[in-house]
Each structure stands twice: as structure tokens, then as C-alpha cells.
Image (cartoon, rainbow, N blue to C red; front, side):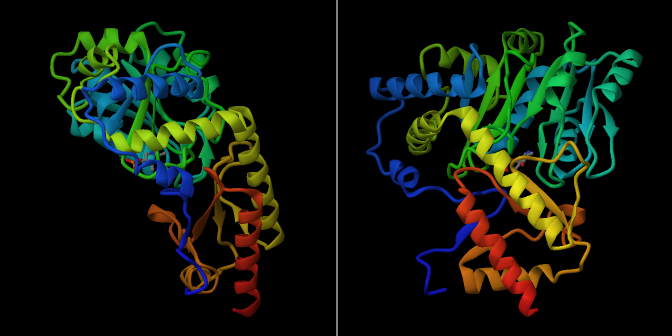
Length: 363
Ligand SMILES: *Cc1c(COP(=O)(O)O)cnc(C)c1O
């Protein structure tokens, strides 16, 4: 380990954060009721709206993405109505649990892990039952599946009373996502995935329709009450103390992202995904996710050749200085994940893949 100044994260979150972004957090504090803070929030807001491709608004909260899961369920689903969750992986299943934990009536379309949800499945469900919202995970980080959000949105948007909720925690800024054009009522994310920020900050692009819905719900909770977030946002402020240091980091990171170009950033992710697929196949591994729906930000490698994943991870950490993923949830070990997200560059990916090959050659 002494060869490396730190263990570099090769994980699908939290991801490696560039020094410039880490250092942005050391700016002197400002009070959150100051003009300086309002300027920071306004500036950041403008950049976030570009990143989400929305004209509406982006809430920023001191939380991980999980917080906005709860916020979406509480502000968007009336207690006497149902919600439809599209489940098939650790994260989509957890979001459904969160709706249930908040007393909501949940129906699910469960697919096998590794499979995607199709617009046809959603159309069939919406013909049978009316729902306050359809909840989909854009990029299921456990299985490496990207769901066809745009096409599912076209189905959901045919129903006036059904809102469209999207978790893009590990998709946002790594794969195409367009809030207004795709008719999304909330797209939520957190900093530590493809955004490449430190953990602790969450973002949600929210539509006017969702705010209208929230007005019809009496008990929305407090910390994630969208009507209260909205009231503050109109003054470039937040109801409670925001994560100011992380917002400095987000501001600096957004500048770098806009300079790279959002579409270029998506393309870089796609290129790294293609490299990873070719590598996995060349080594004799399988790809866990259904063909045609494989994620641009993380590849879940099917460990069909029985590589000793913990031994590989130990080798990579001690010999190469990388912290590796060993799989997630019930498919841990039979799969492992190769992340290719955030500010990762193709040469880093190549270096890590070569390291795994070196391990396999000597194992
Ligand atoms: C990581 C992740 C979450 C949870 O986000 P936190 O920021 O850890 O709360 C939710 N959904 C997906 C798809 C994720 O990858």
C-alpha cells in the first residue's frame, strides 16, 4: 500500500472524488441566511437545471438519495390511492419498502434480477388499476440494468392522475436523462455516484404537477416536505441548514461537467461500458444484465468462471491500491461489479482491468 497516497475507490458509489472537488469544501463558511449563500444556491440551481434538462426546480438537501425516496413517496402518493413500484434489484425493492413503511398501498411489477421493465408491462398494469404514481429505478446499481425510462414515461404520461417518479441515483450525469422532455415528475439522485461528489448531498428535480399533488396530502412529514422546500427555494434558501461545504463542491464540479459537456460525459460513460463488456467476454465472464438494457455506469459481471472475488479484491487493494466491489445483495460473489462512472477516465478503467487479469494469471 505504501506506493499509493490513498486507496482509490473503484466502487459504484461512493466513487473517487477529484482533489479540486474535495478542496472546494474547505472554503470558509457562510451563514445560510446570508446574501453569499443565496448567491451560491442561485448559481448552483442554474447549473443543476441544465444538468437535469428542466426548467422547473432542483431541490438540494443534506441527505443521501434515500431521503428523497421517502420525500417522493410522502409528497406524491395519497393515502387512499395506490402506487406502482417497478422492482427487480436491491434498490428498486428498497424504494417499495420505503413506500410501505410510510403507510402507502403498494403494487409491484417484479421482474427477475438482471431483467428490465418494459413499457408494455406498465401499460398492462395501468389498464387494470389506477395509480397515483409509477416509481422506476433508472439505473439499477445492483444488477447493472438501465430501464427504458423515456418509453415508460410515454405510457405513464397518458394518465393525467398518475405521476412518474424516477430514481436516477446512479444514472444521473452518466447516462441520458431528460426531465421535462420525458415527463418526469421527480428525478432524485445523490452526490456520490456518477456526479462524483462526496456523500451527504441529495438532489431532486421536481415538477409543478408533483407540487400540486403535495397540496392534497396532509401529512407529508417535515424534513422532506416539498411545499416547505419550495417556499424557501423561491428565496434561494432552504428550510433547515444546508450542507454548505458540499454545495461548494457541487458548484465547482458542475463547472467541470458543463465544460466537459453533459452529452460528452454520457458518451465517455458509454465508451467505458463498451470496453468493459468486451473485456468481460474476452476473459470468459458473462454479463448479468439483459442485453439491450446494460448500464452505462456500472457493469455487473456474471462470475461464470468462478474467480475468487474476495481474493481478487484483496490483490487489487494491496498490489494496485484500488478498493473493489464484490457484488451486491443476493448476487454478491456470483457477480461483481465494474463501475465506470463519475470522473473515471478510460485509462484508469484499463489499468484496473489489466490488474484483474494479472490476478487471474497468477491465481
Ligand atoms: C446508491 C443508490 C441508492 C441509495 O442512495 P443513497 O445515496 O445511498 O441513499 C438508491 N438508488 C440507487 C439506484 C442507488 O444506486
